[in-house]
Length: 193
Image 1 (tube, rainbow, N blue to C red):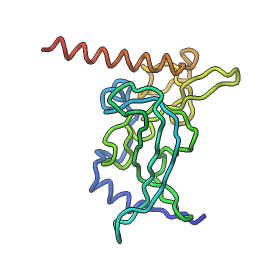
Image 2 (image 1 turned 90 degrees about the vertical axis):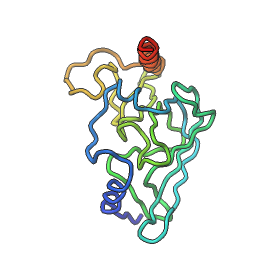
Image 3 (image 1 turned 30 degrees about the vertical axis):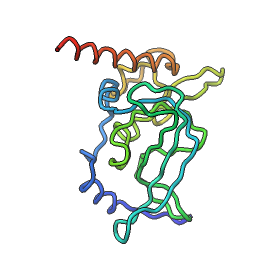
């Protein structure tokens, strides 16, 4: 497979595009929930990469389609597609280091912002995707971008410690924390009126 490095193109996209910073600081749980326009739990059903643009502006984008299992914020509908920079077409690959890579069958909880206008339309790029996995006993759990189990939402985006705070969160517990944050924010907005 022929692999092409497009860091100069990416630099141009970052300058001209909508990303606000070139360094990704992991967002806190509160930032993930508050900044996301859409949050959903779904399964990847299709990944379609294609060339777009002309001349020097020509690049590969991928359209990742999800079957939405549950909507937590916004209205993604039953099927939702994100558009992101990168992918492989006819043996040529364009990618951003650390950008999430999707495969049909992946099950994720997604924190989406600026879909269609941002290079990677996830809050905190790779930090806006959480995998739903099964451990060796078959129990469902939520993992962060490097398959590290999420044990406490309060630790997301904060300095790591070597001590674990408990078992990995189940998807139900993780989604309950999201709903709790959304209700807390809505409650604060209503009390300020």
